[in-house]
Amino acid sequence: FGSSFFSICQAARSGPPRRAPEVPAGASGAGGAAMSGGSRLEQLLAGKLGSDLSEYDDESDTSDMLARLSCFCLELLNGKMVYDIEEFDRRKARRAARSDTTGRVEQNIYYWEPKSLRITAINWWHVLSAEYLHYLYKLLILLVFALIGYQMSLGTFSVARAGVLSLVHDTILLEAIGMAALVMWYLSHMKASVYCLENCVFVPPEEWRVSKDELLTMMKAQDCFTEDSLDFMTRVLQRSGTGDSTAWPPSMVPSKDGSTKARKDIDAAREEARAVVFPLVREVLARSNVRPEQIDFLIINCSLFSPTPSLCAMVCNEFCLREDIRSYNLGGMGCSANGISVDLAKQLLQNQPGSRALVISTENLTQNLYTGNHKGMLLQNTLFRCGGCALLLSSRWADSVRAKYKLLYTFRAQVSEDNSYGCVHQQPDEEGNVGVSLSKDIVNVAGRAMKRNFIQLGPYVLPLREQAKVLVNRVAIKLAQWAKRRGMPFAKQLSIPAGYTPNFSKGIDHFCIHAGGRAVIEGVQKNLGLTELQVKPSMQTLHDFGNTSSSSIWYEMDWVERHGGLQRGDRVLQIAFGSGFKCNSAVWVALRVDRSKRGVGLKAGA
Image (cartoon, rainbow, N blue to C red; front, side):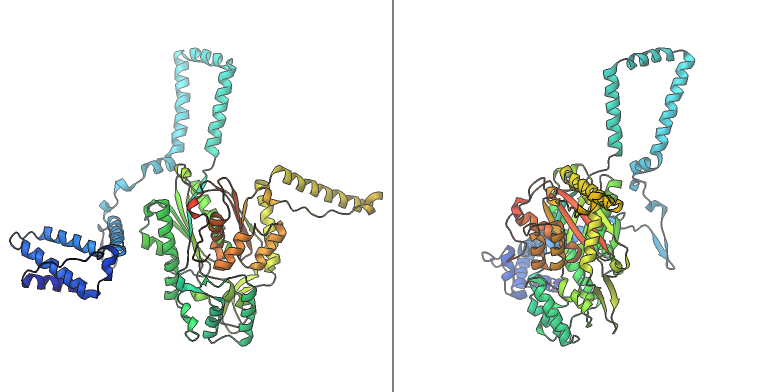
């Protein structure tokens, strides 16, 4: 475009002045792009340049001419191109403002100039509160004692003592002072609340979506699976609960022709990461009206793709985040990693009240297509799909007014048994093909991990009536066992009562169970005694998007917002399972409901 622009300028200046042709109606804005290629554009620009140059030849007012020409070009090429140019200029300006050009490089050694350490960049309030505030408290206490000693030496302390004694006999004033002291103590020890300003999920483009038949065709195109393996994947797909519009990365979609092999190189993996993560960050920042430089913490979890530079560095580079941002890249945490990221963000935000954190959860499939024939590893080719989510969390009190959710509790349970540790394991098969092996015991292991997590969760979310039922049940079991051990006369007629599973629906309004597969969802449903309606967010997410790993619980949260009848004040429980073996949970309370989502599907046909 630059070379064509220069040639047009030369032709317009050398040729005779021509009148600019009229632009037909509808040619401005988005309709301007419908002109017949570059020739039409060159004619318009040449005509405009000819008239402008003939008008300004005498005045030589080049700056004014260029300004008018710029306005003309912007009118002609407005829309997305103008937005992209403005966004590029903003990013360029932010980078230029933050770049330090005061240093110099000599013989591959960087020498910084002392003047580059600007004193205005120091946050003196942070320095005072972190380093010297406790010294100030001690100094004030010493000053009070010094003042009392000085008054005693002058003989004026007796008057003050008389005033103090008179206050001691005023019970109302003493109660007020005591109440104020308790309130101040509580406020000083109370941790900051954590709010979710916005949450969004990645909706794959239409060209990423594949049906189950197309997925089998893609597997055949790899020319590495036996007929027995293809039959096994066919049976698993039929029972998986996934639909015919789940997404695979663009590096694998060309295999739908039945002959093209999928790309598995790191460049293709980075392309998938950019295609998923960048739109999520743009959307969550735009919807929350927060600028990139207002982010204090960045947390990204992706289990199976951990490049160098990291995914956090990729986001920082794209969106020009602050140089002092604290970023955390979590890997190998499995499908429960979002709960870990949220818990980490909560700890960071509470330790630094008034800050914001951007949490991104995704999984990368490009380099994780298993090309062997081990049945335990073939499951990953049929269950996992592309997806991601982004959350903007804040511990600012002012953000509570516009927040969507408030984080009430996070609980984590890590099961360290050998069987639990190896039930989800990345390893090579007999032929050296690396894949994730899923054990047959994964449902039982997940049940034990969930039990340990819910032991922590129960006292915080269950009403007193349900907790009392649990206590009475435990006492009855202990008494029956004690009577049988002691050989009591009536012990033979006693039967040890079964353990009581509390009704968590009494304290939770909506359940978001990790969409790890139909067996996982049905196992949680059976253990908790949930209805079909209560597990519908998980089942529907599994059907529409498949197992998107750690982000699946936020696809379910989005479904609850759109179709689950979410109301202000409702409590939502998120449960996720991950390798290791882990069970993590989070409880949110709805503060604001986006009614524009009601009844609107997340993607076409959903």
